[in-house]
Amino acid sequence: MKDQPFVVLAVALDARPDAARPWIEAARPSYPCLIDRDHRVAELYHMVNVPQAVWIDETGRMVRPTESAGAYEGFRAMDRTTRKVPHDVVAITSRAKRTYVEAVRDWAMLGPSSVHAFAPEVAAAHLTLPDEPVALAHAHFRLGQHLLRQGKEAEAEAHFEEARRLYPDSWNIWRQTAAVDARGLASGPAFWARVDALGSRRYYAPVDMEGMPG
Amino acid sequence: MVTVIHEARETEIAAARADGDALWLSSADVHRATGWTLTPEGLCHGDSCVPAPRGREAEVVRGDEVDLAAFWRHAGHPVVRDGAGRAWVLGTGARQRAHALRSLEAPDFTLPDLEGRRHALSDYRGRKVFLVTWASW
Image (cartoon, rainbow over all chains, first blue to last red; front, top):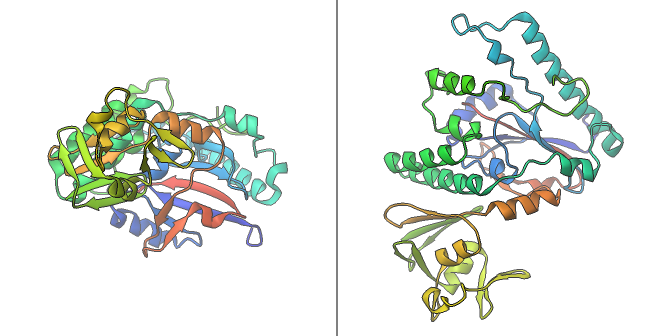
């Protein structure tokens, strides 16, 4: 891969760079890790969750628009007391990740002749597009982050609340503005209640790729 | 002092005047805050111009000053402000975002790494980019 004209750009959707820092320092990545405290990338690319990815070719054109980056929602099968996920579900999750990483590698080597690189009309058909409430939600989120940095927590929260109301599909906005536990994770009872409320809807949208779970 | 936030810009404007939902700026400050230019045709950026709301020209343009918030709403973009009128977000409407995505041209952005070095997506033109998000939360 070293000789390929290929780069990973990892973007942390994190309002506080210090929250992202220990993860980046532990991973010691060889690729750029950027900090996006206002979730600009999520806004520009209409992303609702992490991890999501976009494949961009040498000319700056998207050959796979925003999609789940090989993530499978196996955590939904977790026993909430023991925090254990059944082995067969763990296997599905790791197979999904492996399949996705292999596909990225295939594209890095083969470029447009990779079966995973979409032709323009196929890429266009895979786009999901924002509506006006989503655009307004991002504006509220942005203002909320600005106010938070100025120490105006109550006023910031009012704008976050409006953003969450306008854009309920955004886990990025919800989790970024939710209370976090001692591990820094927004995965308390309120998170699980929200996941449960999905019912048969997906936490991670399925990836349209051979070998990925449907 | 008013902070105007638009896309990657956060501009402090000493001479801005907020009056309820109106945000009055000089044409020079409008340009500084948004990149848009006030012309006789309206607010222009590149080839596109947003004319003043018809019949309300006198309400939104006074001499060299313009109610930027009114123009912005008229153009179909979201405008959000704090209670004191000291911080304004001039957002980008869904129609424009969707139009940009439909072109399949990856929207450009510039973000810092942990050391504060700034990286633009367009710095990596000529290489394939696997753009991937994650978060600590």
